[in-house]
Structure formats: structure tokens, C-alpha cells
Image 1: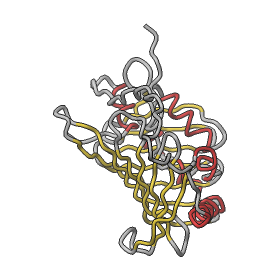
Image 2: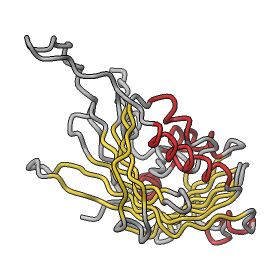
Image 3: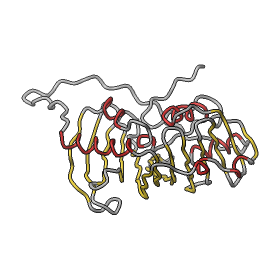
Image 4: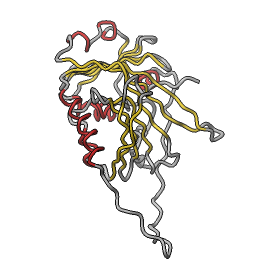
Length: 283
């Protein structure tokens, strides 16, 4: 069965086709801390290598400096089948943005193709195959949009860390260790530096272009998730610019689609985003 994107699920579920979202289970409670065995030294404190920090900062600076950009993101995530076997699903996003208030995300597959448009005033979600469109008021910046789109309709952007105004903020707040792994010449068709970072709730490995400092691959595990699932985003077709034609952030065809409410699919509280604990639903 093909994996449908969050945006497709929102619109098709609202159309009465009975499609529901997969839920992430709530992380278990942390086990009590244990003392080191007699004669064994405790684990050394986390360490942040200056070289790793330098590579990460260069990547953040390159992304922050771009007034406009486009790229392709292939997002792969793991989910267990009913027999416990890990299965891997993928979606492809063609992303175009202009800071601070314009974003377009075209998702041709896997699953039913969908489109998302944001122009600083409204956000529009569209499924061409069903000619369904949902339109809602939107906040004035991409940073705010990421949370509002999730809260209003459970729309999740797996590549959000590279489109926010300060990509380093999430690293600065949560990173407890970072080290340089080495170089690779097999990822993204270019030479990349490999960096491993970790915090209390996340562990990630990043492949970052040596020449342009742009990410080519990010693999993330959230250790507090029961399944310890792997999430991966592969980036390609990077284009940085000063400005993009405003027409790119709207669609006449989508605007003329059959209107639907902008709301999460199905009843209850939306499932948590990767790495977030599930919210308790009132009885």
C-alpha cells in the first residue's frame, strides 16, 4: 500500500473517504539512573568538537544567508508492519521558498500527489486528483507557519529545519555532543563532511557539502520513541537566489478547486510530530 503524505490525508479524510493517519505511540518512561559497575569508570561527559561545530555553523550560515531557494527533499521514515517487520516509506517534496513569507511544496509521490502554497497571508492545500482545496488564514512568517500548519491541519514538513530563519537555533538549544566522522564522496554527487550530533531526545548524522556547505543527507533517530525509528531526508537540486517570481507561490487551478475545511483528518488530537511526545486526550 502506498504511503500518503500528511497533506493528502488531511484533504481526503475530510472528503469522507475514510482515510486515517498513523499514530506514534507515546514514549515510555525513562528507566532510573544506574551506578557504574565496581571497577568501571563512569561514561565521560559529552563532548562538542570544534571542527564539528564549525561545519554545522557554516551550513547554518549558508542557509540563513539565502534570501530565496529551491531544493528537492526525499523523506524516508520507518514504521513497523503488523508482524513487527520494519517497513520504509518515502515521500518526495519539491520545495521553493522566499524569506520571510513565501513557500511552495509540491509532493508528486509516493501516494496521491498534493500541493501546498503560502504567500504570507493565506495557506492553501490542494489535491489535484480529487480537485479538493483547503484555504486558511496564515501567519506572517515561514517560522510561524510551520507550527500553525501542524496545529490547524496536522501538516508536517520533514525538511523544516533547513527553511527556518535560524537553522542553528534547534542545534544550539538541544545539542549535547558533536563530533566529526569524516568525508564521503558517495552522497549527493559531491564531497561531503559527515558530522554526528546528539541531544537528550535526538541523535543525528549529517552529510554537508564541503564546497557549498549545504546539507545532502540527514538521518535522525529519536531514542525515546518506543520503536527507535529511523527518519531520513535526502536533499538535492539546490538553487539559491535573491528573489523568485511571486506567481510561484499561488495556483489558479488550486484556487478554483472544491473547497474543504482546513482541519486535521479524523477525530481527536493530531499524532505528535517525530520526536514529540503524544498529547494526552481527555476522556
